[in-house]
Image (cartoon, rainbow, N blue to C red; front, side, top):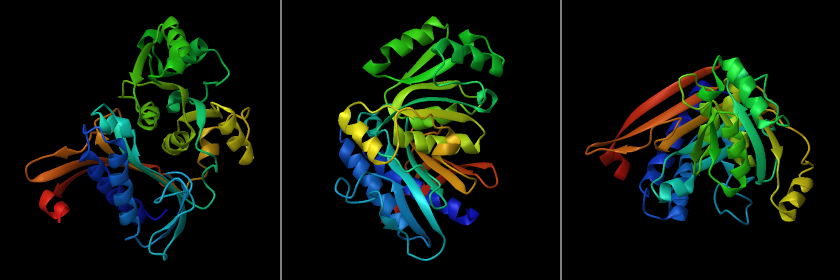
Length: 316
C-alpha cells in the first residue's frame, strides 16, 4: 500500500467524521450516517486510485452510495478493495453517547473475507494474549489465561461487552470470574482494537456483534499482532441462508488473519465522539480539531494525527 495513499485516506475519514459530528445529539441517526456517507464518497472520487467497496453500506438495492461492489476513485492509479463504515455507531452520534468513529480499511484484491452483513460471536485481545484465547473455552478460562499472559490478576481484567439483552449470561460469567465489565451501547470496532494497547483500560472484547465490524477490527488487530476470533452467529433463518449463500458456515472459527489477509492492508479511523480509541471532533471558534490514526501493515507503523481545520475553509 502506497504510504501517500494511506495518508490520503485520513483526509477522507476526517471529512466524514466532521460531517457526522454536525449531527451529534440531534436524534437523527440516518441523517448523521447519510452526511458521513456523502462526504466519504465525494472525497474518494477526488483521489487517484481504483477502489472497489467490498464491505460498505449494504447491497445496491439497500444503499445508493458506497454499496457493496461500487467503484470509487478517479479510475487511475492503484487498484484495491475497501471496507468502509463512514459512521460506526450511528446511535451514539444521534443521542450524544460515547464512542463513534469513521473507518476505512484498504487492501489488495480479495484480501478481505467476502461475507454477508450479519452477526458474529467474537473475542479479541492484544498481542500478549493472542495465543491463549479460545472461542470454545469457558469465559472464566479465557479471562484467567489472558490475565496470566498480561501479568495481571483476574480482578484487574476489564472486558468490554455490547450492552444487549443477549449478553446477560455472558456478563454474569465475566463477573463470576472476578473480572470487570465495561458496557458500551455501540461501537465494538474501537473497543476491540483498544485491547491491543497496554495503556488502555480495556483488556478483552467478548460477545456477539456485527460481522462487518469484525472484519474492520480484525484488520487493525492483525497489524498490531493481537488476535480476534470470530464465528458467524446468524440471529434467524434469513441470516443463516445469507451465510450459506456466501459459501460460509456457522462452525468455522475465523482468526484475524482470515478476515483480513496479508500485509498490504491499512486501517484508518477518525473519532467522531470521544471513545476508547480516539478523541472526537471538537468544534472551536476558529477551527475544528480531529483525532485520527493510521495503521499500515507493510511497515507496521501506527501514526496518530491531530488536525486543526480552518472552519471557514470547511464551510465554503
